[in-house]
Length: 144
Image (cartoon, rainbow, N blue to C red; front, top):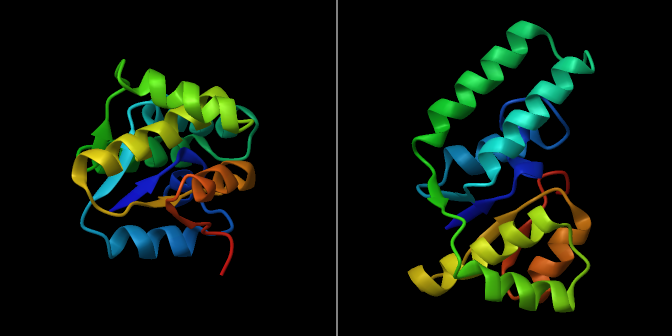
């Protein structure tokens, strides 16, 4: 199973370094998982890029539409109270942003539930170090 953090998932909808690899992973994977937190994170990135004039209004609407279509097919990990103890343990060991701790705890929780390996896809180097330390497989779409 593949878990996507928003730092990598955004590459599916906006052309960035690593977009080809993200598309390849997504096109060849049956189950894509992510946190419910990904939804506002993605909309935030899209609108920020538009406001900074990095993308046009047409590109903004296209990115949002494509993301919302895909969202219906993702296995979305809810932000539940049972994640709190995992988040606490993660933050005791790693210097992560709050959102990154939610993504990592969601992937760890999911691994425990489905009893299978999870490959965590992200572009954030600090997050990937923590993910690897916690025993998940990692993929950075910007690295070959």
